[in-house]
Length: 177
Image (cartoon, one colour):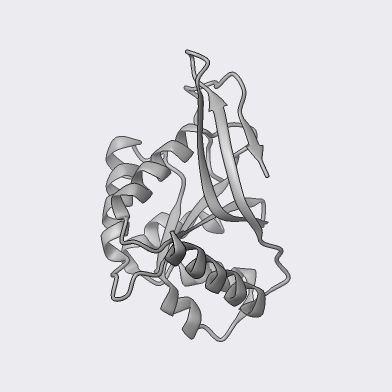
């Protein structure tokens, strides 16, 4: 847990120093009550809004591609008027980690499990962010488009808006700050 907090702090400092004109919120939780009135929730480490999109940023410090996939699945279940046009951004910090592993799992879930209706996503290693000279929010988001396997997934960033799920209507969906 100490490594995670340390890596989140590094990301936060990098973001503050490199990304102009965007305020980053820490720890955003999305939740709803299921049909048995049980509270289900999932959180992201950081959150910001840009170009009518909700950017959900998760920092992975422990080589946890499959845990991120579970988080992605849950967040896709929480969509309605509160989580309308999200983009799930993953920043890996584990030394030597190849983001393609996470991309492979997320693409499979988006295409096969969610039948192409899952929210778009992007995955980078923190070194990509460290090596970036800095710039505006668009430039930051484009960092996540660096991997060819994600190019088609992120193509919708500047084109069509994300379509929320319509086959689920949670009783009470809210975003806690």
